[in-house]
Length: 110
Image 1 (cartoon, rainbow, N blue to C red):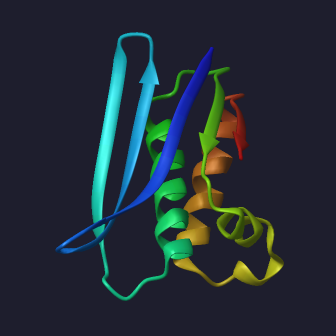
Image 2 (image 1 turned 90 degrees about the vertical axis):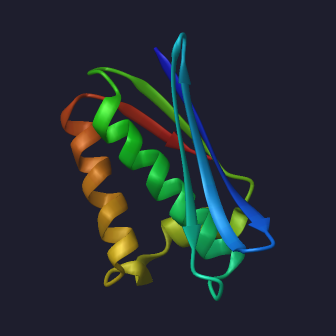
């Protein structure tokens, strides 16, 4: 089974936000979030990735293969950096990844 999610920064007149879409057959889930006006594009992309992983952690069945896509190379580099140890966002991402792995899910972020 494949789960495809995409995270994307969206700018509107009211500020910055993120959007996540989950699709698998007839199952669809989406989440839009307004984020602080003073965050960077990379931080917005990371928030979208975090939201995508959280959705999968809640609704993906065991043994799922999950793909999370982002077009931000900087966000991918930050996800792999060792210096994120004290960030709440990265703690949330790590915990949700642990939950998915406990359900024998394979997750790819690219």
